[in-house]
Length: 107
Picture 1 (cartoon, one colour):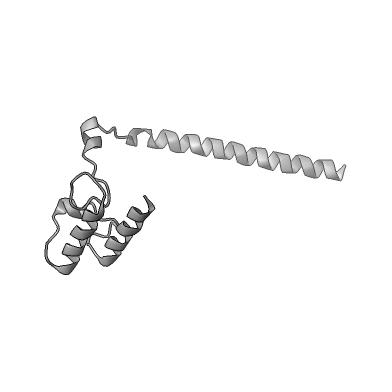
Picture 2: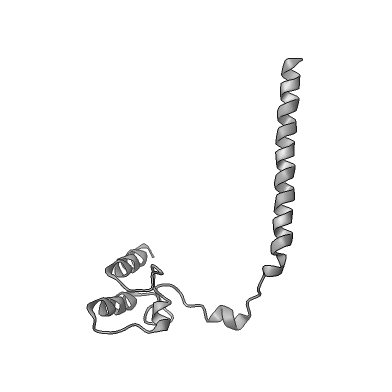
């Protein structure tokens, strides 16, 4: 009898925890339902791809060269180019160039 009681208690705890998760998920969903913002097709097309530093619409070795120009001080990046920063730290470094080279090699 003790084994059945223990099993029943365990099942009750699991069921209660499951129901609590369902209720909490529902409450969070209701609370955040008004926070949804739609994206227009125009906005979706203007998203810059991380790594497309020269803004030509392609991710290639010319983006790495552009980063090396920034790192060497030959050029200064624009705000739009900084948005394509691979590491998203707001500046171009050798780490960015190496990351892009690694990604290019994996393609």
